[in-house]
Length: 382
Picture (cartoon, rainbow, N blue to C red):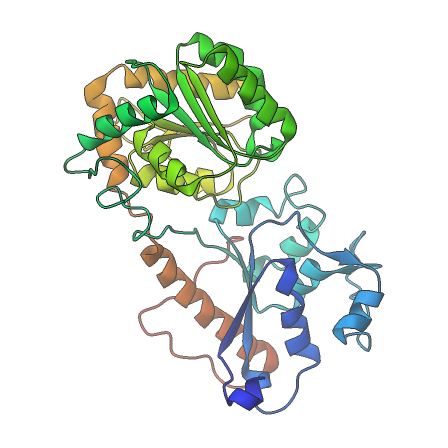
């Protein structure tokens, strides 16, 4: 197709295992003028999905001539691990947070690829995602009843009152806590399940939207049935309702077991909804624990994967909520944070320049390009 279009890009950027054979194909199969200069970037969103097949997959891909990659790593030498091949052949590899790029080099998070990733650490980078400010903007979001901003945040209280009315929750001076997520263990729902009796005893109101494991769907249905004025659940996903929840809630819970990047906490910051998160992956990179003495931080974090550590973080948030001036400072402070794509876009430009430089050095096809003001990103291993 590229010769037909007379277009050969400087960089081909692929995502996850579904496209991870492309760096391999460009390195081994495609020849001729134009192809040799193409650098490759592989973004890993979730390392657990790898695409593991037998030798027949190489025949289907036209790679049988080059066979299996013998790296001397148990579990990889005798199978076709598509993501592993992508990591090996790509010029640069990145994840969607710096913390996750470091975590996946450990046995705990590496999903069997940690040794390969440690070998390739010089090409491994972490770049946070951003959110689209055209879609997520409390000043003009058409899905929320009242618009507001960091400079004029009064509308958030009106959004909260409207959300309570919409969901049948009682008017209360207690915090309204949100969960916007898929319902799976990796998202921390086993912690939520264990902590729920104590959480509702605190008098917190809880609104949940999402779908997933039937066990958790049924759990939230039971709580909503038993405490209809305190707990509300919407099984499925309604983007418009999710926006109203972000606007009306006081805090967002994300006790994930692991979280490569995460978008919900970024949306929460944008809407002045304070995140309560486990310090892992992108959550650790974006949410800083609130320090009431130094008056720093933008949320509440906990470390060990334990329901009572999660519960303690929620209690700290709820206690802070009891001080309106402090909570209002947090809300306005969070809304002023830059969680847009603009910061990430600059880093991707740097990553592409690093890919081109690495490709040219590896293949000996000329000097690296002038990067101008853009410096190469620092590998996470350094």
